[in-house]
Image (cartoon, rainbow, N blue to C red; front, side, top):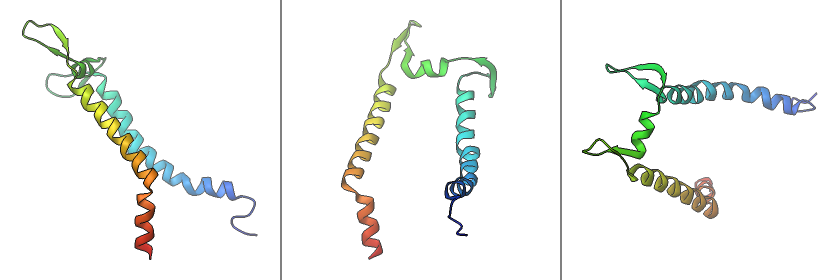
Length: 109
């Protein structure tokens, strides 16, 4: 019987399981920890209190002026949107021009 015979899909799943575990542990795990800590209340001496707090995200959108009033500051929003549009443009450009395929073809020949 051929290894990739009737159980081909099962072999693919079993072959990719270690990859999924490594990605889950070393990539998704730290992202979840970072997301959880980012919504906790900061401690004065470092660390966090286990209370839900969005003050860190509020600092991205608002500044406090001299009169202790909150005012909208679009600086971070502009940076985030510019980065998003730049990444979309780069993906569109590289996919349409197939630069990676051309580079691979010239290196192979």
